[in-house]
View 1 (tube, rainbow, N blue to C red):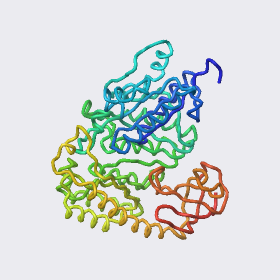
View 2: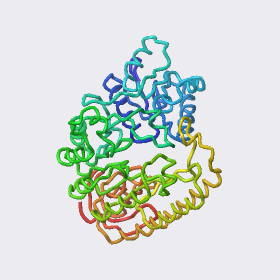
View 3: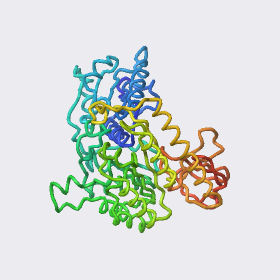
View 4: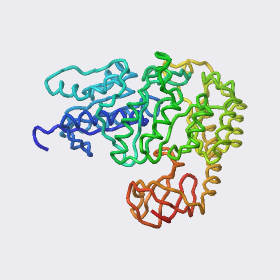
Length: 453
């Protein structure tokens, strides 16, 4: 490394939305002449984009900061930057508790990272950069896709209009701010031109997209339906996957659009959180069990092959054994393709965190294990139905265990959160789409051989 070379290593923790913020910081610094280093030990600046959503994520962020701080001892590290949601949420506490860090950049200032580092190199002693999280990326915002070139996340909004009693997102990220459809489509085209076959649409709630713009101007055309239609017709992507479709906004029009557009993946990521109506009310979810079941029935009636993924919270304050048993019965009846489960954890500043009837940790753990054991059986049976079928698979790379096995995903599998397809017979380029005959199934993964490319 030359004396004047500016170098940076990034660590992005938490959700895909956080990752897109990291990619914008990468783009900004790359444009400013920084060399991106794969190895943290080779960088003079390390930026950790933290997550502050749940207790485990917060602890992971703290551990990573302390781990990276050790590189200051006789190493090249000069600037340890703590950015993102944890920084935004805890501000003063984090600054006081982590003297190892040199700069703290909240989620309302990350877009200015290049200027912040330039000021520091010029002698600035300022250590904290906080602002309201009102920044919304533009068409001209530089961004480096950190994913494999054949897939990319597409963030359509910032913040959230919902006020779920257990969630701290509005406290960290603020109110809903939707981007213009024209700007989103322009970015989508650039990502596809750069090699992306799959676009993964992310936000805190896809089904609220455009609500804020319509509130400002009733003539605004931004809506989930119009956005999906524009992306399907104009982006050029082979797969368009939508994450975070809350059930209260899944309309018959959206279902029909997903049904009829070939490049809209038949994948419904629908975070339900619970099914007992009383628990849902305490969560401030504003839907009843009957309304949720009605949405599920509509999706399955119109798109029988649809994959439905959901998430649940167990051990929510006041959850009784009977209410948990109702949730188990619901999972057994619905036989979801994918289920994620979280043990409720108290989040400061939320309504649920102040509720008196908190559940014992042992009970949470028991309920978590029981629900996931049930879903494991369901998943195993569902995966067996794929044996003998030929499925289009997007090749992602090699198995972590051996380079003798390729790995990829069907459209029914989202990256990072779902299982994979391991290919034990055949050769293909990473990023290519191949037809794979499924020969074996496991609890969460499938195995197959390439039939054609």
